[in-house]
Image (cartoon, rainbow, N blue to C red):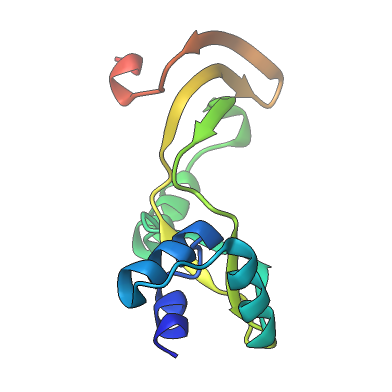
Length: 142
């Protein structure tokens, strides 16, 4: 039962992390297939995670929506970073009891090495773009 309480706190753990937890807590070596078999026996299955950004704040969002209501659609220019990123520490699946809904995990969304396409777009299409290696920072727009 202690294992499942731990897993409920860390539902995005992979099977190797579960094996390590069992070793750390009980000094028993188990395989990933053993973990998989016992998760199935306890009716825990792998679910797609519902990712929730830690950085969201409804009051700030509402204030922004109110502020942009003063502008016309043609006055907006959007800068939309797109790219190929190698995510670190970001899982999309979790182990959870069958019939207990979908677990959610708060994560900061960080990336490792990446290449980016940074276009400036308005309602008429792409105005300009830049392709570069690395991250997009606020200082780059000064």
